[in-house]
Amino acid sequence: MSQFLRAVYETSAPEERAGELLRQWMRLPLPGEEPGLQGIRDCAPEDLPDLDGFLPLWAEALSDGDRGNKLVRTLLIEAAVMSGGLGSLGELAREPGPGQGSLYLAWIQAMRSAGDDSRAADAAREALAAEAIGSYNRAAIAEELAELSAPDAEAVLEARHLAWRSRPDANRLLVLHHAAAQLGDPARVMAEELT
Image: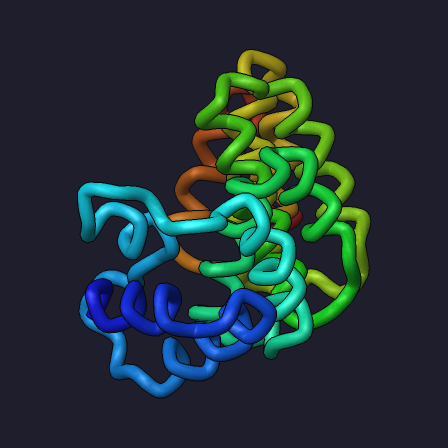
């Protein structure tokens, strides 16, 4: 698949390359792991020609695509990071629209991977204040915030509350209980949550 997409890239006119690559990519059945532009770069010894000129056009084509589509979002995240780093990914996450929660989550996780926990926590708080974030991503972002808030037990408990309330399940309830136990009053917290 990567070789085919590389051939599409290399044989398309530069001004049509981004749109054609996206059209062909969307037609293909996905393997178990979603490929990215990096996979196309890596499938040959030499890098893609005119990559610097292509990346802004690629990001634009993906931005015009269906951000609700997981493949488009995955490629868009990769394109943002390749073209402008974590700042570009943050700008993308702040754009309202389908997939915004997934984009925020990817941005937070990328900052954590880069060791920028303070900015990741700020981004998590920003995301949780946004109204359009769905329950699945809201819970995942709250869980990220809980991990980033340690060792502040009260902040951890607050984030665990948010995760539980966003998408209740047995695991989140157990983690919430543990966070409440760190403050010495799990029975009160559980009574509030379960009544």
